[in-house]
Amino acid sequence: MKAVILAGGLGTRISEETSVKPKPMVEIGGRPILWHILKLYSAHGVNDFVICCGYKGYVIKEYFANYFLHMSDVTFDMTQNQMEVHQRKAEPWRVTLIDTGEDTMTGGRLKRVADHLRDENAFCFTYGDGLSDIDIRRSIDFHFQHGKLATITAVTPPGRYGALQRSGDRVTAFVEKPRGDGGVINGGFFVLSPACIDLVANDQVSWENEPLTELATRGELMAYQHQGFWQPMDTLREKNMLEELWASGKAPWKIW
Image (cartoon, rainbow, N blue to C red; front, side, top):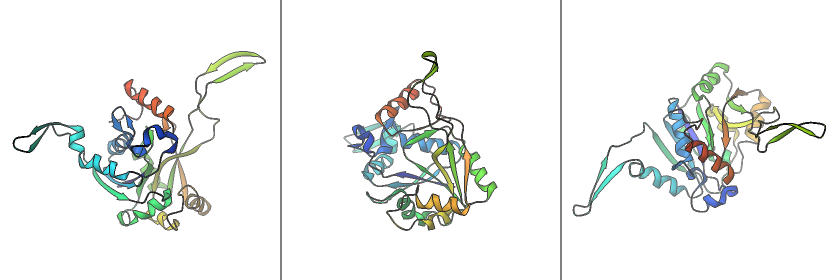
């Protein structure tokens, strides 16, 4: 099975980092968040990736072109003009990088890579800026069991601020960043039939609008409930929080 990853957005809310690199290349623990996402899918047996590039896509292409340099020890013999790679840390990945345009919307990016997906029974689809400990394999099994066109992962968003519990004017407890109010949102990890791509008319279609609305209206959108860790990286604060989790050695998404 293939996984399509959106990696072409500007990332304007984390411009401190994205002025020189695309958002999926912002590093967590010295590795691009895109690498963490690929490792998550790979841990569940998905190793064939189609990455939708856009803004500064050449940075992503250069990263994979020089993957051994990033991940291995090397010796450069200047007299012989040779490079020797030591202890190659190869991944079982096949990575296809497609330029889907700088201004293309999320649905349009998916449509631009349709030719790489037509022969698939289903494929995974996600954003290049969110981490989770979601059981990808279980979500895939859920998708094939219900037989509908699309599976969306439903998550409870993390709280942003600490909450006070009160009795009158007296504070009885303080809860540090509780989970949301019980409502669930789009967690960004999809399993889709290639037929879903036909719902995208052109580059200006956002996947989150017309296609998902149409799938829900037709009764073809099912929700896989994820109760565990889920965290987007939309701001520098969230980036730093993910960095702290990785540094602690207790990053919930590190299942490999």
